[in-house]
Image: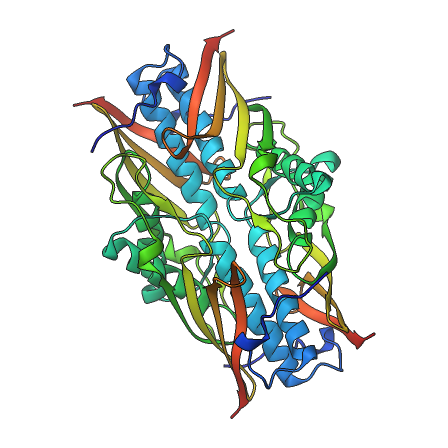
Length: 130
Length: 130
Length: 130
Length: 130
């Protein structure tokens, strides 16, 4: 896959690793805001279809090697016994792992709810050259 | 599926048919704004996963009997030959059919791009009691 | 403001009132899904700018006579004392009033959190001809 | 503003500069996907209210020092002469500048449409320690 000549727009100071971290952030920011607020309920077929659908969308973005979304089933309510008995995707549900490859740099990054921070933390777990 | 006692909030003037039309509009408005801007490219596996994912999300909403999303393949670019060679979902791509059932009223509604209007029109094609 | 010739797409059975209810639903569905997940914090300048910004966006949609968004301040946390101390817009915060005018039909509709239903209910409070 | 103890989640290999680039990417990814698809039209009051509204939302996110959104007026159509005469925000309209401060590292980053790439490029224009 060729990379367009976009480097003239970036600071010449930016290392390949720094660029890879930037690209990683873009995808996690997009992923989270695409997911937030989507209707969902505790039905395995529905949950896994939403996971695969948004994985597929994110996989189109630049430098995405792979992406895996997993909603924490324990946090999803809604059995559709009444019309209003469903849920909306929020930060407590979202778990995702993203692999970015920018030139020779690889990152493994995640978003997951962290109880101590009460926050859906996005973080880079690994970064390496290959 | 039971319907919660929500009628006290609605105008007593509102007929069952009018309520069904309101509920139909809510789902199409949500569907369209959930889809807009999602990354996509011209790959059948990716396209159909996004279709199924958002169908699954919308199906959780109240009074949705069924929903079918279809992206017009001819309008989707992107073969991922370069990093930036993908597309974003917009009104020219989106075709959807929604079936709402509110009490005894059924609607069949659609969203599709209408060239003459240059607009992604949402409309109720059929409404009937059963 | 002229109305495009869109009636050929709609069921000939659909009354003006039913069409007005459909249009009302579209806007509330869009409004809610646009708002869901937006970052926010308990700062009056920030809250009112987000309210006005999304009101302005929704006001562009067809047949919207006016729209007023109000976030329930009591439900918004976040004073930015630490980096992660902010909130996200959700159904408990969102209160909105929408006025739709379709031909001679006017609707007044709302979305607001209803404790008894544990749900951000969208409803048509008034509908009249003028 | 205190920074929570989130470092245990990040790779110990990650430099402060790399972390700052990651945080910069998150905000631009979120900003872009929040804006995409919002209704808009060529009216200065409406345009500037949407700009300020989403600036306010993004300003709540961690490590954002400032953010400025500017829609390219020349690309926005819609004068509301008919019901369907408005536009939707897309990558050709969006121009934004973001300033991130992570510990002693500052970044200046942008998103803007680049004709040569036919793409709404996100890039880090400056990165420095202070």
